Length: 68
Image (tube, rainbow, N blue to C red):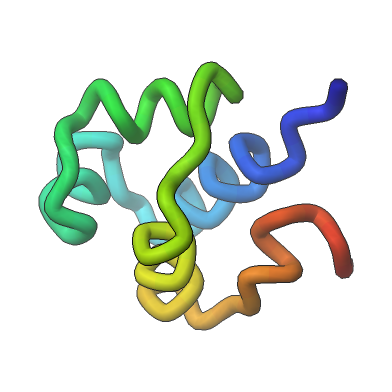
């Protein structure tokens, strides 16, 4: 199964020049959570998914891989 969310999250984070620790602080989660999301080992809650989308200025559908 593809991990579009994790790939897109990593790409958005790197495009902003953020490390996992910095992003974790912005989203009020642990650094290990960001790592798990990027590797596809767990998924964010709906509220965190919305927060990520708002932080990066993208849609939830984009993050989920439902649109390009």
